[in-house]
Length: 601
Image (tube, rainbow, N blue to C red):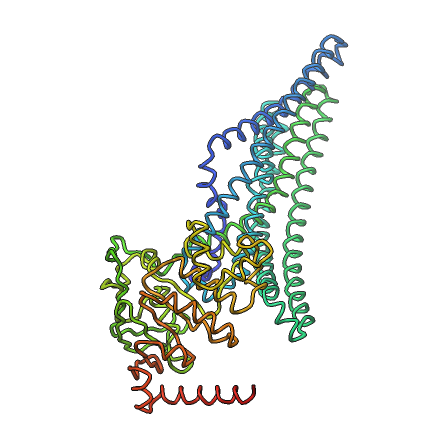
């Protein structure tokens, strides 16, 4: 959500907000038959309703006054037919409009989520996931109400109002002038208050999104919350956010209530004035009772329709705010995109990797570079460990290889191709990642492993689990591979989660393997199992390891030592120990820590 899109003077923001629901037109255009059906039944219902006053006029002037019983019977029979037509038209209108609303919002949700999946990590560095979920759920629900029931009511009353106004003019032009003169006094408050309602509605939705974001974060970390006995603090903070959202919603409701009150008073005041003048003309004999009744019914139709429009305007304002928020998401553009004519990566892949004088700073911290002129190469099948103190830039190297970001200067090559010239999707198919903090989805064990290759067969998934030493605990689960693992793999141990991640990487079968020290947070037994699985995974692959433990470093063909984003040392374990530099210091600290752990045991 770039600030330049939402900031700026209020005038341009207001202009943009006048037609935020216009972004839904392309979605409606996909279902022309349903739109046509909805419009047909809307028009049929309106025409049927508008024909009723004509029958009433004939009955009063020719049936009641002339005492024509046959005519009365005929017209009341016709009214029953009109009632049946109106019932069918209303049912058709409801079916087509509500179905259309559900379909459009389903497409909108899929479109927004697909767009979110394409956005670069730069976007997610600064946006709360809970707020995005709120837009995807609550805002689309608000839009659904607008496209469905609210739009139906709006269109029906708009047709009724215009039709009734036309029939009023045809019935009595003189009386119509009174109603027409009142319309500007009704419409202007609608427009003026509508802007305020939309602004307040947008604020209410923003505050609700903030509360939802905080709730999502707290629920995801509930074990930590309870471990620190922070239930009261978390509940209080969420309660304050909800109260703020309620206050914003109440301000919106007040504005809508005032808007409705003003509109209804002005509308019915004009109807009373028409009735008073019309009654005087009937008494003077210049207007028939049937004509007055017909005009009055049309006036009531027009007044009721305009009153409904004042209420629906508030609903549409809510939907406009929601649509604007969704449009802001859709206006976001990924920073990392494929060039128009991407360079194809060589086939078969070898896995050669090179950094050439690469400098980089995160977009959120442009004044704090994390890499400074970094250069190194990794040959196909080589295992290279990257070590260094915290903040040295180790994780940044992995982020750049995955092309989550582009370097500020320099270039990165995979198999001789500059990453900025390649298609990011093709690049990432050649990379398998085993992160330190494994992501386990709230899905089955099978689906979590198959995340590495969604089209993989059950046999391939089982083979990957076997190689990763995960088959034993997976088959022991209540439903085996079909067992749901819970959100973030809460039912698994740390070692089990890591072996699921390794099975996922094995299934991907990529030539380049990135290991973000997958054993650093494990106990000794789990570490042995995970390390054996990693050894299986690394065979025949170009492997980069962010290493924290000497056991991992000792198995590397080469060690790169980073400090403040620069390559300061390079060599084998023995050669670097002999130099007595940063690596030797880190190794000594870890050895002393390990000796203390052994003494404690």
